[in-house]
Length: 123
Image: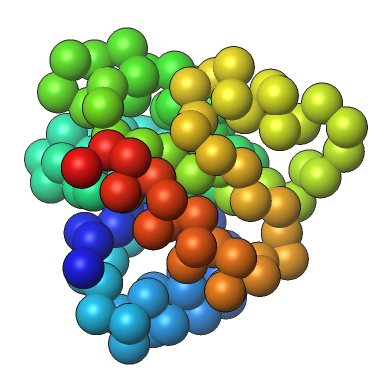
């Protein structure tokens, strides 16, 4: 099972996701803003990062670019989580360094499949 860093500022979403992921056997590390997410990624080197793009302190776009710009965190797959499901947003997330994109509201079964794909590819 994967060690997952969930960077999300909505308590409702992180509570829902963390509990469901942990029930599936994953370990979940939480961060509530982009800066804390960056620090937790450096400290814990998770298998995958679920990154909300609209965060306080440092947004997800900036955090993704920073993570992909550092040697220690460059290879960690990032799945962007965003309510911005408009044309071009997926490309924008991928250009920022995200490996995949998941629009909100979250489709948990689809998100689990995306986690499996990026962790298998990274492993």
